[in-house]
Image (cartoon, rainbow, N blue to C red; front, side, top):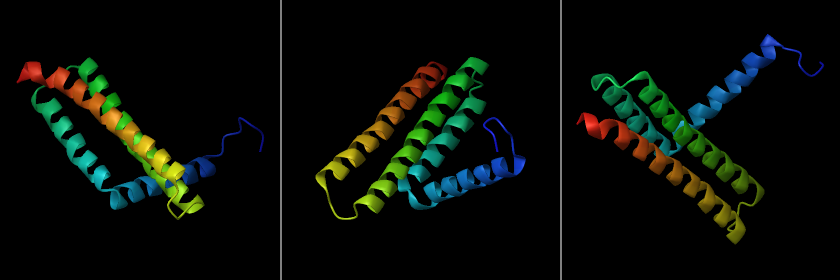
Length: 121
């Protein structure tokens, strides 16, 4: 297949792999389950408080950023554990930095949420 060729079957398999990864993330990561609660709360608050289209855009981007960071953190941890199962300080540092990425995205999302919701409350 040449670059640029589109194969619907391959795209479907890629989508299935991504959904399997999302399922793994939610089943195995306690923080992902907290993100589900937070995401649900933000969606309900947005509907109840009737946020604008622009505010929805910011909320969706913030939610997506947190979920993306959590997924990448989980992937890095799994890969690091596969490559170096025993404790190694550099592997530990990489995991800590990836976790910091999740924390930073969550803080940014909280700021967005506060900026949008506090004036309505």
